[in-house]
Length: 391
Image 1 (cartoon, one colour):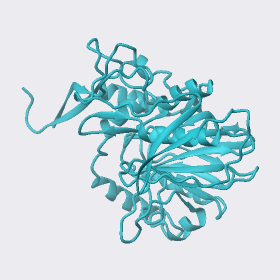
Image 2 (cartoon, rainbow, N blue to C red; image 1 turned 180 degrees about the horizontal axis):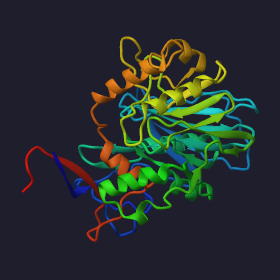
Image 3 (tube, rainbow, N blue to C red; image 1 turned 90 degrees about the vertical axis):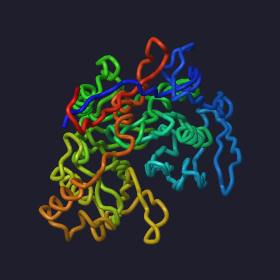
Image 4 (tube, rainbow, N blue to C red; image 1 turned 180 degrees about the vertical axis):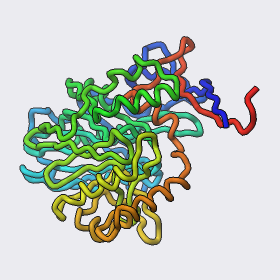
C-alpha cells in the first residue's frame, strides 16, 4: 500500500491579527471559506467569557492588579452542555498546597489544568486545548478564553505554559495563550515540554513536510528528567513517564501529579502505546512509578471518557490508592506480562485519533500555526491511503 500526500487543505480563515499569534496583519488565513466570529475582546481591564449554566449567559471578570495577592478559596464553575468547557472544581488551597482549577473540554475528552500558588498568585497552565472543527477546518479559542477568564478572575500571573507531550488528539492552545498573556500581563510565559520532543518533531516534520525553521526552537524550554522549578512558593518536579509517547512527562506538585496521557481512571486503565516511539513496556514501568507514590497522592489525568450508565460525569483525579486497588490495567493484581498482552492486543484494534494529522502538525510547532502561503492561506497536510497502484 502506498501513501500519497496533498497540501491543499486550508486551515484557517479571516484576518486574525488580533486573535491568533503569528498572523501577519493584512494576511488572511482560510478555514474552508468559513469566517471566524470574533465574539470576545480582551483588554487590560476586563474580560468577558460566554459560558452556560443551563443556558448561555455572559460572565464578566475584572483583572486585578498582579501585585495584589488574592487567595482563591471559592469554587468557580462553568458548565456547558455544548461541550465547550467545564470547570470541574477549584480546590481550596493553603499556603502549602496549590489551588487547582480542572477544566474539561468535552469534544476531545481533555482535562486542562491551571495550578497556582495562593500565597503569591503565580500560576502555570497544563495541556491547554485549541478548538478545532475537523469538518469545517475551523480554529477558534473559546476553550482557551475560558482558561483566561479564570486566570483574570483570580488575579493570577502565569509563569509557564506546560505540555505533558506532543498530543495527537487535540491542538494545543499554548502559543495562543502565550500571545494573549504577553499582551495582558506584560510577561511572556515560556512554553515548556520534555527534551525528547526533538525526536518527535523530526519524525513528524519529515512525515508532513514541515520546514525546519517552523518547529526548531518552537518550545522555549526543554525539561531534563527530574528537573525542578518553582512557581511562587510551590515546587514542581518533572517526571519522565514514557510509554504513550517517548517524550511524555508528568508534573508533581506537593501531593498531586499531573500525569497527562500515561494512565487514565481506574475504569479505563491506560493510554495507547502504538504511536512511533511508544512502548507498552515503558508505560507499565511509568504506571508503576506513579503507583509507588504514597496512596493519598492525587493523580490528575489528561483525558477522561465517561460512559453511562456506569459513570456519566468526567472526573479529573483519583488517588494512588484507588489505582492500586481498581485500575483495570495496572492494579496490584495485574502482572507485567498480562498488561503487555492486553495493551498490545487493544492497540492493534484502535483507529487513529480523529484529529491526528492537524494536531501533530500544530503541536510540534508548540501551537503555532503553519506559515501563510503567498496567497495568505495556512495549510495542513492530509495523508491519503492508496488502495490501488499509483499512476
